[in-house]
Structures are given as C-alpha cells and as structure tokens.
Amino acid sequence: MSVPYKYQILPIEKVFRDTVHNYIHVQHQVILDLINSKEFQRLRRIKQLGTTSFTFHGGEHSRFTHSLGVYEVSRRICDIFVRNFSTEQLGIKDGWDDQERLVTLCAALLHDVGHGPYSHTFEHIFHTDHEEITAKIITSPETEIFQILNRVETGFPAKVASVILKNYPNPQVVQMISSQIDADRMDYLLRDAYFTGTQYGTFDLTRILRVIRPYAGGIAFQMNGMHAVEDYIVSRYQMYMQVYFHPVSRGMEVILDHLLKRAKELFRKNQTDFLCHSQLLVPFLREDHTLQDYLKLDDGVLNTCFIQWQQINDEILSDLARRFLDRKPLKSVLFNSTTDLDILNDLRRIIEKVGYDPDYYTATNRTYDLPYDFYRPNSASHRTQIELIQKDGELVELSKASNLVAALAGQSQGDERFYFPKEMVNEKQEQQRSIFETSYQEFRKYFVNGAIIHP
Ligand code: NI
Image (cartoon, rainbow, N blue to C red; front, side, top):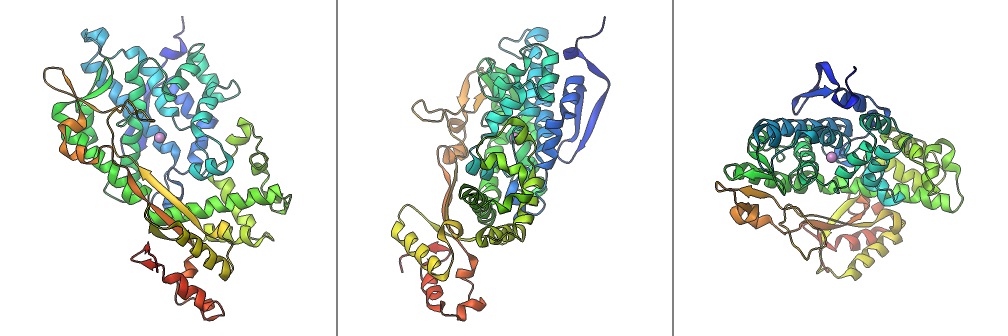
C-alpha cells in the first residue's frame, strides 16, 4: 500500500544552501512540491525590502529566500519541541503535539506568498491586501498551491490559511508563525541585517532556540534565556530605526507612491497613452482584478512600466519615473505635533510657485513602530506578550523581568517628515539664479538642523 501524501518523506532529504541558516532542510514531499509551485517561485522576483535597497544596496534579497528561512526556523523549533516537550512521546502536559508539524511548516513557508511588488506602496494605491491575498492563494482551487495542500487532506488548505490569519485553534502553532517573537521576525531581522550589511539585527538565534518552549497558552522562553530575548527586542528596535525607517528609502517610496498615483489619475481622465506597454497594470487601474492578474505582477513588471513611462508625454509621470529609476529621492525635514501646520502649507505654496505640483512633489510621511508591548485588554491591537517561564513553572511577562525591555515597552518609536524636491535646497542648482531665486531663499529659512522651524 502506498504511503499517504501527507506522510511522504523524501528518500534523501533535500537541502537548500542559505546565507543565514547555512542549510534549509526539506524532508516532506509536500514542502518540496510547494517550493516548486509557480506561485511560490514567483517570490524570487519580488524583493523583500522594496525601496530599502536604494539606501542599503546589498538589500536585494527576495521574498523567496525569506520564506524558506521562516520555514527553516519553524522546522528547527518543531524538532526541539518534539525532542524535549513532546506530549505523545514524553508525556509532557500541555507540550507539543507533532501532528501539528506539517500544518505549521506549510504556514511558515507560505506566510508571505500573497506579497506583490513594492507591496507597501502598491497596497496603498491599489487597495490590495497581501494577507488577504495570501489566504486566497492558499484556498483557491485554481492555484497549484491549493492543489498540493488539498492532496494532503480535504480542508487542509483552509487549515493552513487559518494559521496565517491567526484563528487556528492551537496557539503554539499560531505564535510560532506570528507573535512578537516568531519565526518570521527572527528570520527577517537576521536576513535583512546580513544583506544590508548592518549589524543591528543580529541576535543569538541558537540561544533563543535553546530556551524556547511550548505551554498551554502558546510559546514561552525559559528565564535563563532572558538576555537573548532582550537582545532580540533591541535588535528589532534598532533595525526599524536604522534600516526600515531610513529617510532616503522613504523618499524613494514617496516617489513610487506618487508615480502610481499619477498613473491612476491619468487613467481616470482617460489619458491612456501610457498604457501601451503596461497592459498588466490595467486591471488594477480599473480596480477590477482577478487573482491571476495579481499573480502576473512582480518587480520586473513595475520597473518595465517605469522604463516605458520615461518617454510618455505627461511631464509629471515621465519625470517621476526618471527620478525613481535614477534614484533621485525627495529630500525631507522632520516635523512633529508642535509644528504649526500652516507652515507646511507655506512650504507647499513656495514649491508650487517654483513650478512643482505639490500633490506630486511634496508629501508628509509618518512612520512609527512599537518595539514591544505587553497585553493591554483595552488597547485596539491586542498583542501576545512574551512570557518567561520561571523554575517553578510560573510565567512572568518579559518587561516585568527586564528593565531594558521595560524602557521600550509601549513606546512608539519613529518620526514624521515633510518631503519635497531636493532642488529646493540645493544652493548650487543652476535654476536658482533664475527669477525664482527669492523663493528658494525663502524656502530655506524654514529649516534648522534638518527640522522645520518657524522663520
Ligand atoms: Ni515574512
């Protein structure tokens, strides 16, 4: 009798060489088939960090490589759980049930499969949602991924999707993929640090995997691993401040956002010359797209559109396309809640006087992250707090045991910036000797040390 698909183990395990985890080990036929599916292979063509590579040029790694990494971290956690905390083999109460392994690994591998090119910006303009699309790819009978998962057992695709959507009944499985310390974050911090060439994101993964353990409410960490967990939280905080929120990458993101916004505006006004080479974008401009339309997109499709748009007879579209391709970010200054918003309007007026459309050449960009928080019953977003297990088995929430984490807990970190064309403050700019000279001088009066002031 042949072995059911879900139990089929490769005769010799397959390995993928990896920069972060050295080897990614694949033992299940199901996992190998998922990796080889066309929807998963598409992730090779989507950069993990989007416009961040304009600042950190090494950060060109793909969502494919990150997804394999999340799978590998989850696989290692399952191995540790089954060795040390197995309910079935060791009789550990509220321990790990290894029947959950396959659903966990599939969810880990597929958690980002719905990402599109330059996700953040694309979603903002075209109102798509990568999490929703991930679930759709997994549960739509037309995809190869669905067909593979459905061979495991009927209803299995829905099970995998429910882990990603966080309503799967076993909290150990959900928290391994998605919590404040999960396989996803552990992989992207290490991977993004490696590829951007920064050191902030590094932490002791080996130690964390040594002290991680399951309990009835999910996943916790032994008390003697507290410093490794602390270090992970600090790493995450620093990666956000130094890499993910970098003002220049955000300046490129603003250009991308306005470029797509311009395309949408031209489409709305029926000025569709620019579409001759951009047919793949039409369903999104029309706001009526199918899953198959979405799966055709990747970074290359968008970049090819931008290359074509440079020649288009719309000054704004072609100029923004050029700025994006040639890496000409908008410049920015800080402002905050005490800044008089009339000042921003003054600045927009000056920019307009010089000849830029402020709708396309200025922006405000607010970027904040909460490095860690404990569970707050009245808060809008419920976070699963990180729990430490003491010797007597009692749980203690991380920020109660760690002063370092207590200092970061509940504190949003980030900034708010006003973006504008760099030419406005470039004193050597040829055109400043023109009739607009006074406007440029007036503009510069509003800034001191990279922040907006009242002149
Ligand atoms: Ni991810």
